[in-house]
Amino acid sequence: MPHFICRTCGTEHDDRAQPPSLCAICSDERQYVGWQGQAWTTHDELATAHRNRLEMDQGLFGIGIAPGFAIPQRALHLPEAGVLWESVALVTEEAVAELARRGGVQRICLSHPHFYSAMVRWSEALGGVPIFVHENDRQWVSRSSRWLEFWRGDTLDLGRGATLLRCPGHFPGSTVLHWSGGGRSLLLAGDALHVAQDRRHVSFMYSVPNHVPARPALVRETQARLRGLAFDDVYGFTWGLNIIGGGREAVDASFDRYFEMVGFGG
Image 1 (cartoon, one colour):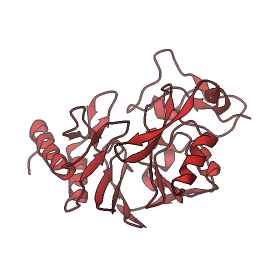
Image 2: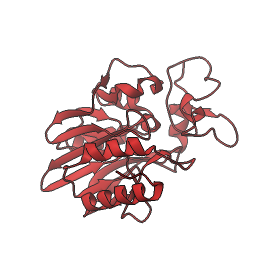
Image 3: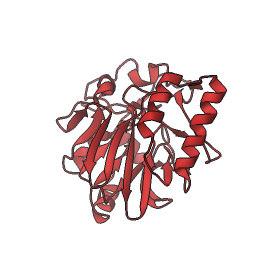
């Protein structure tokens, strides 16, 4: 039986004879069902018309899908930490071989449910590496696997300079990854801090496509969690949507601007 993939968000589901009536992620108010209605595909079908986009994104090796499919996120490889950050719906032998050539992957880490995508398929293709998902977002996991590891709390030290931090607002378990090494310090932000098109600010959104801001109290919690953390660059969810240099200052200015605009002082 196939693992059906939602055409709107790219999330792969447990194997079954018929697809679900709705994708739970897309029918949630943070996302949306495609304008033509709920539609599904399979990995085999996806592979006939698409390929993995494999290229550098401002210093980090990225994996996406070309032509574009579903949400256009790209995964990023941090070989120094052994981490593949995020997932995409298509897994190819070419991409797996390239990751191995670049140092391999010991763990997959996800920022939030919109990017869970084919995380289980990626884990299997990489030899059964653990998949780190925050416990608060367990309900959104649509494909079960023995490789899933649900972490709890607000921080998780992965070793080798990498730390996961829970930054709620978009989802209760929304996560960023901080890495420091090799003369650089990075914040891989997912959608917890949504890099703006001017690439000088970030925004804090409950729903990105439906334009709903995050609750101020949760943004304040994110601000407190990141306080004192040094980072030069902020990597957003897709190709080129990054703040390269001055990342810490840009995030601080963005917090100030957000709270001023929503009238939330203190």
